[in-house]
Length: 288
Image (tube, rainbow, N blue to C red; front, side, top):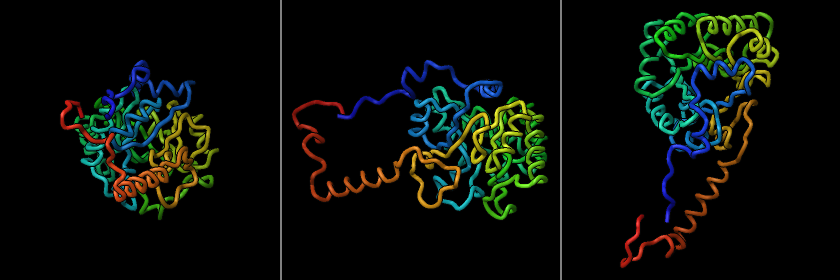
C-alpha cells in the first residue's frame, strides 16, 4: 500500500526560516556560500528544498531542459509563471526566483516593471532574475522601486546567444573583462540583491566578487563566488548529450531511470507486474 503523502517538507526543513531576498543579500557579508538550483516542478522543488538548497530558480533554461528547445528564446512569461506556481508550493525554506524571459523586459523599464509584477502575482515568485548589464540598470532600479527584489545576471547571457554567436565564454581579455566588471557594478548600484556570473574566467569572477557589495553566484565562474548554481537535470545526471565544462554530475539518475523503466516494461510484458501484493481484495475494505 502506498505511504501517506507528506506535506511540503519534513519538520527538519521547516525548522529553518524562509530565506528572503534580504537574507540572501546579507549572506554576501561573510555567510556560508549559497547553493542555488534551477528546478521546474513541484516534486523536484520539494526534494531540493528538503536537501537544504538555498535558492530555487525557475530559469528560462526550462526551454532546453523541459521543452526541448535549442535555446531559451522561445520561453514566455506564461511558461515561467506556470512552473513558478508549482515550485513555490514546494518551497518551505528556499527562496524562489523566476527568470524574466527574452523580450519581457528589453523594450523599456516600464515593460520590465509590468512583467516583473506578473511574475510575482501570477508565478508566486519572491524575486525575479534579469539578464544584462549597464543597459538594463534603469530597469532594475524601477523594478526594485516597485518593491520587487531583483537578481542580476552578467557574463554569458543566454538570451543574447544570437548576437554572441553561440554559448561562449565572456570576459576574456582586458577590454572584455572591464566591460563585464562595469556591468556587474552597474546592476549592483541599481539595487540588485545578488548577481549570477556565468561562463567567465575565475580571476574576473574573483575581482567582481571583491568589488560589489552583494553576493555573486557562479556558474562556470570558478570557486571565488559567494555561491554556485546548476540546472537540476545536469546536477542529477539526467541530461543527455553534451554537458558544459562547468557541469558536475552529482548522481547518474538518467541511467537509473532508463534501467528502472526497462525493468518495468519487461515485468509488464512478462506478466510479473502487477503481482498479488499490488492488487485489492474484493471482500476487504482498504484505502488506496
